[in-house]
Image 1 (tube, rainbow, N blue to C red):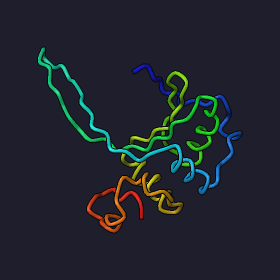
Image 2: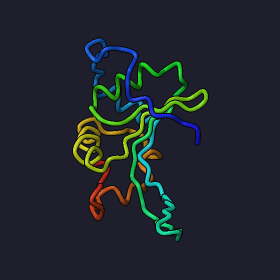
Image 3: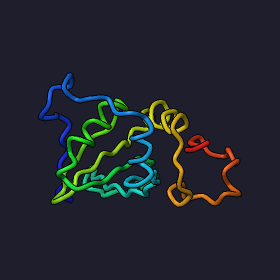
Image 4: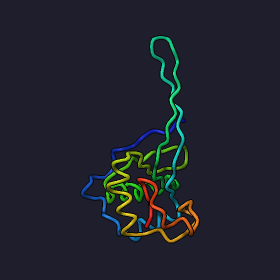
Amino acid sequence: MNSTPQTESRHNSREIPALPGEYIAGLVDGEGCLALGYRRTRNVLGGRERLYYSWQPQLAIVMHKRDRPLLEAVRHTIECGTVYEHRSTVSLRVYAIADLAEKVVPFLRSFPLRSDHKTGRRRSQRNSRTSRFSWLP
């Protein structure tokens, strides 16, 4: 994958405005997703190759690269994540479990998503609290 992280903004952090929570929730609802990815990692140690498998939760918002300043403002507002560019798209991704648990989930509980299809759960499953990441209320 030829995507490169771009953590430095062209703008000074004082110039990036904080966005309203409702606006960010709308971006996540329309352009983003909360996902659970399955990762395979290769590690060669002492001439032996080992494969490791793991699950990785993430928040991702993907847009056209002309909207990079908007994703930088989102990153500035939620105070976590990395902005990546890949071809004609730009994405904000949050992988760190601590950031997801301590910043993203409380934020989305304060400004809940509106569409059912983004949660990946049926309405009957909304009240179950079986996971450490009960993503949405």
